[in-house]
Length: 406
Image 1 (cartoon, helix red, strand yellow):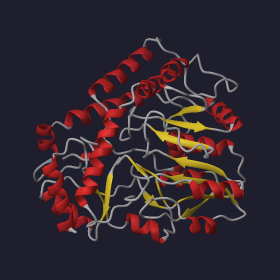
Image 2 (cartoon, rainbow, N blue to C red):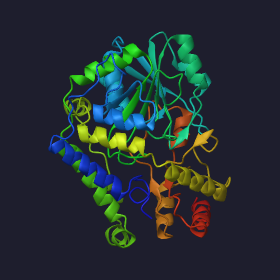
Image 3 (tube, helix red, strand yellow):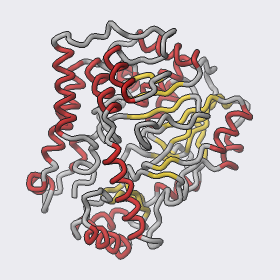
Image 4 (cartoon, rainbow, N blue to C red):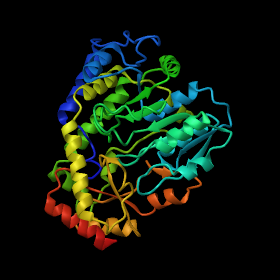
């Protein structure tokens, strides 16, 4: 049970306590922002303490710490010197706020259709989408899959485009920096992401001049308040406590069916001034320190177990149900999506059978006008629990229930 609360938060109470200690250190002045590296240094936007922690983990060159992937993307567009009215070719299924950021800069988002099986951008659709006004290409990796970048890399090279990949949903491990052919690779450490730091993102920026410009621009932004980050850490703590089977049943089970996702739902402002204010903030020191800790102590064993559990569930499901990304070359199964004819009915029937299925959320959407491949991915989308602790017998019963319900 508890797909979005109990099994989507990749953190322990120890991680939450470490974040609280980082907040306490900031409150007492133990860790300050005075040690930021200059744009001529390593290219990192991490404060000195975070640099030390992340360096133990591995390479940090050109890694810029941001408040979120959306903030990093906004930062990129703020310094990229793209003429207003230019076009951004973007995967036709993405986070809707990425389109909001594009439009905020006076640019036009042009959807590039994707292959429902691999979730990669369709090469023919890509060539059609690119015009003389195209300046940037954004490839979104979905649901834990890492799709091929070959077509996007060729198109970016042939047309002189800035290539960006959104890896918010597809962190593959502690050494993952994205595709080296991308100019910018964006990774999220938000509440529901792999190795969550209860917020934050890292942008791996390869052109040195671009990295320096992004760092300089972010230096002029205010930092998020410690209280706003503390609220996220406490939200994570409440969600982990509520995931206890007994408490979860009391809160969300039976006829009550309270929505557990309300605990972790994003509350980004919807009005343009509020959205812009939300975007234009840097991370506080406590968040930087928490990300450094998560990078230094990356939960590789949990990621491996989740990947194995997803593969086992896929094998149990077989070919009976359509799965977006089923043939993607690499997959960590951040979530386990299936497409069915009547998602509302399927969710009701599965929940009645004790399976905590969840319909598609507002955190993923098609870029309009939605091309056919994107429409097929999103039509009838349902997320299923495929977590490592799921007993094999229940896994097989769930697979059978999905096939029957569909």
